[in-house]
Image: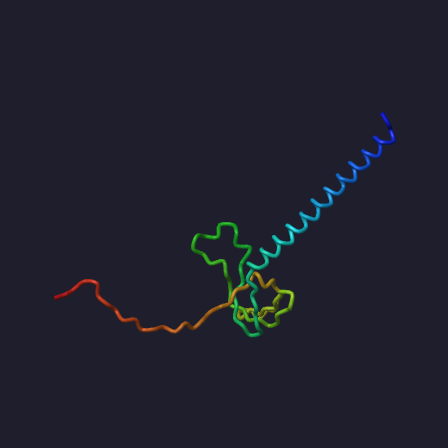
Length: 126
């Protein structure tokens, strides 16, 4: 048995193993990048303008919240929207201004127009 030949063969095996590991590592990074791109494409970006009326998600309402109790609190006004997603809001009730994450906010819709709907009786009265 030639030790030099065996050593050379073992060195080639280790290099092949290292190449397989590198390929697996690169494939893992490619998979993670594609998964992140897919996930990010499904996210909805909320854009708030100064003066918008909004509601704030109450994250502390987890212990016995009640079945029909709303998790959205207050009526707030946007004072400043930062480009990275944070928003300065002002409480209408107390007048305090504080900074929150934009993901915890949703627009407040008010003043839906009430329309008169024609009633059609279901039974015939003769």
